[in-house]
Image (cartoon, rainbow, N blue to C red):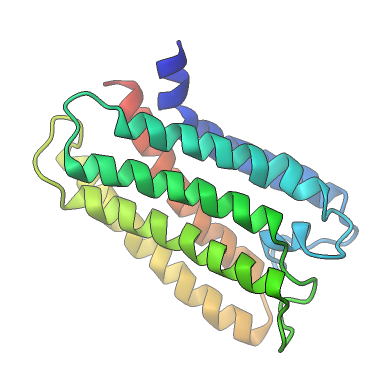
Amino acid sequence: MFEFIAAISGVIATVWITIGVYIAAKYYPNYSHSNQFCSELGASGSPTEKLSPLINNYPLSLIFGLFGWHITQLPDSNLALTITGWLVIFHGLGTLIAGYFPMDKDPYTEEPSFNCNVHSIAGLVMLLTLMFAPILLAFSPESHIISFEFRVFSVLAVILSVYYVVKLAKAFKAKEKAGLYQRVSYWIQLVWLSSFSLLLAQV
């Protein structure tokens, strides 16, 4: 039972963060999912500064860590799968740090605080780990775990995610719909993670 829960923890993480962001936003007056970042829910001085990391970042870091650990423990695992597991673990660590060090309430401030800089670095780690992981598996050595179809799906997921990261950068400069494009890009990564999780649950 524990191994099955660990295998599907990628799916659990996706469902958890979706519900968690929705709940936290309910306690943030006039919060805009389209124009505000997810991290603004836990920003310094926000109405949900304490609540958001408590229900999102902290438990999610454990769930990501569990899934990453499960990947590293797969029987007949190759180096690519082991590295992928560690990338997911680092994603969980980035999630934890991003929750502990809040961003500034104003994401457009010209002089970000120390906490905000640490938060941004952790966010970059989160972004890159789930960019590299699908690429690594897409071009990994032949394995009975990773099908051709999943390799193709992994490449497409990365392309789509990068596309929306570019859209996010442009939206951030325009100060419009940055929250929307952040969510689309990250949820594409989470859909990939969930698909990989379901794949491993069948192994």
